[in-house]
Length: 184
Length: 406
Image (cartoon, helix red, strand yellow):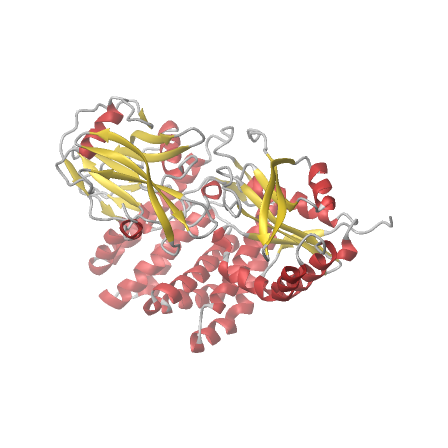
């Protein structure tokens, strides 16, 4: 693989909503056919830009939701969002933080951007005092599952059905527990 | 208790959510009544909540019925009540008589017991360490005396989790909150308000020194800010500015749009240069005049270390820049002075010049650019809050943003 500049990670602002919507669409189109029903996927992709604009209004900074973007030479290549864990599918352990999104522009896959985003998101949740750290992934998204396994996460909920367009889509929950922080 | 009963309580937190069911999950007899735990489930995916509801014959206890005294005395004797586990602080002797529930009702319920202690009930049973109890105990341990002394606490302990249920601390007779005290001083003798601002600055400095005095305690770190933290400060500030613009309409909107570039330049300047110098530690987190008690002898005491109630518990316990507290108090002084200008004829600008100088002079050295960026961020948040809740007050933070950005 050719040598590339490391990606830099920063917090997104509402001004990034359109580009985040576009990248969401491209990423989902590349990853989710055969995992998410077509009609649902089309709906997600169509609604992505508006969804991002709304998210910045509905989840102000004090909600604890933080959208991170990775950039290289000024171009956004992917994003990750962190938040206090919510009981979207199952009640989370108390004090848990959650990585609710991690998606890359398909052209950026394999260039270290995903790893940079994950490391940044994990450090963010840890610094903010959240522990453990949770990530939900589709059971059949094998690339994502290998990625989280390499990062040291383990599956703690082996299977849960997320109903999408009337179809059960199995998802799994990954988890990592941080050791108690070092003193000093 | 029905969903409608629960939803109508002042201390019920999730007013925007729809309750599906309310279930009694625990009942522990105490005195003439019981401590009852109700679990509310909702029609969304955010999770259920548990509330502590003391009851006598199906209603909240009335003064003189003895439920509050029984709970306070149980703490004093270190006698558990079912799944409620009590902890008594050294030096607290039980045998209290007399109970008087305070009229000020917010997310907690406060009852004066024996005219010397105050019993604070946390109605939402939130799993995890409650920063109010945690910081009160820490401050007692490091000898910080300007907060009401801790007498004991109660946690509700179930298999997986512990939640703070109550705290018992010294009651300061005759004290009023510093917002009320400042407003009455500003109506009669503004110079005394400047002196009070200086005392608040000194108190704030000592509080921050105390909170940073045990950096080896993992729950109370004191260290330089990381690059993630300073980057997050900047993004959060810019985002608050964007939300403030979005919350306004018409002429107000145009006013803020006109100064938005200056606001962003301030943020870029302050947060760009803060990297490397800024420090973080535990802070008060929701610091304003209403969080101080003014005693009749002029002394001050800090209360309510719960942090911003809208934030997740973990985040309220994370270290932050102490300048956020300083900025919060400066915004509170601005509110007090502007309100006094409208209602009592105070000349707010010259008074604020002196009061801010007195407060900051007593506090000590600060990074002025970082402080004013935090003030500006807070004022942007206030714009959004006032636009939604109290449009009659919108002029106040809007003028503050214009002053701070210019």
